[in-house]
Length: 289
View 1 (tube, rainbow, N blue to C red):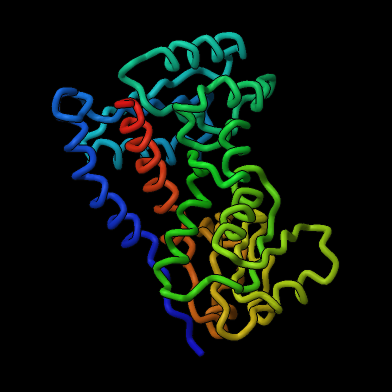
View 2 (tube, rainbow, N blue to C red):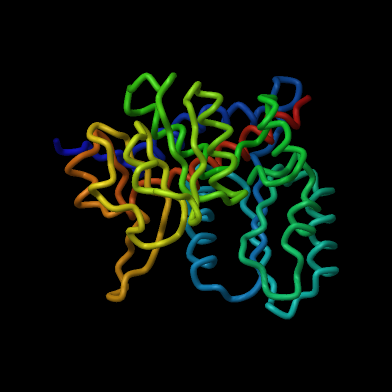
């Protein structure tokens, strides 16, 4: 068996194109059902983390391509938590801004949870606020964290009926692992949440029809663990010794056994940015009510 590739770049382009008419509708005056302006996204970058700067540039490029208002707030690493919270308060009150994203990691000395909790739930396009997390688990309308939302879109593109499938999520972060479990459960999968202390991880993976790897360890999931015909979604982005990027899954071995697999790079990453744009457009649409 040779796996088919789930092309995240192509899927992200499709998501972006579907947003264009919705953005155009928002530009109409309020009397015509719009808001009279483009959706507005503010990205706050604190410090000089190189990877974060790259991600912010990619988000800026996509927002500008869609004709959205994009505001980048770049702050030095010396910024205090109080200063950062005051900036978030200003963005919460800004009628031109529909979505706020705080780029992590944050410098030492700043409480990440306190900062993320300060973003108003209506502008929390990252889906990290406890209110939105609770709504997700209760199956209520909410902003879904962008990476898990992108994974769901990729799974749907396989055309495989997901109901009843055994799924394993490796990694228990609040950003990917835990919301991924909630979303898979909503797709009627039977879900196992695995992690670094899971006993017989190879056996757990080997029983799964769907494998979501989000642990952040280069090639931790070996190719021969994969059940023949499984769908493999690799969320990991790790740097090899030679500077190239690799995922959490041993790609070549897994591709020989899986039915579908995402590459790294070019798989989940582009979808994360696309779903951020989708969440921002949705936030702007909600501003009409």
